[in-house]
Length: 131
Image (cartoon, one colour):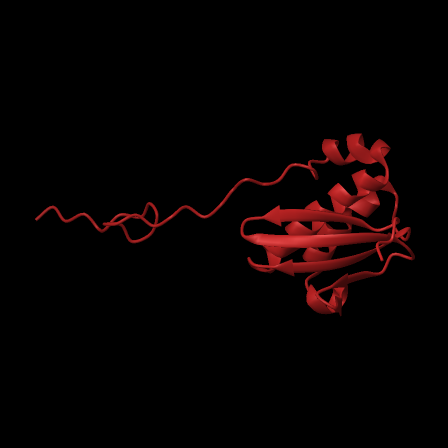
């Protein structure tokens, strides 16, 4: 039974993928069946996740049920933020300019560069020996 008030979106950053379900509610955010404070103990990560709600002044109007996998904690937080921003636009198209202005709708395209042969990392070269 599909609920018409549920908005489903996907947010991405590096290799992290967040599946976000936005439901009208009281502002509770659940990440991988845990509360936001338990899953993201760092204040900066929580601040980035709540940013779309604060910019659009919709804090406390929606509950978010998030499933996130891949990447590190910082990339996961940014993926959740991207997914929430997309979901808010689906809820109200009038929020798009505010989110666009603050750069919350653009997927960050930066990925890890692959390691090349003959190098220590992607670009780090072996030490040069003159003699």
